[in-house]
Length: 45
Image (cartoon, rainbow, N blue to C red):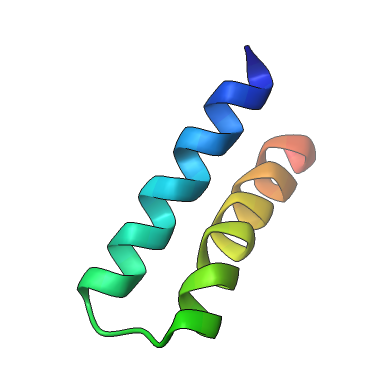
């Protein structure tokens, strides 16, 4: 289940970045950065 959620989150972030003008390389890393920040914040709390 977690793998499916991670995939859906990644695809959504990728499409979001592409839609708002990011190049392909930036769009590919954007979801990893956002999810990484959220994970770090959750662990720190």
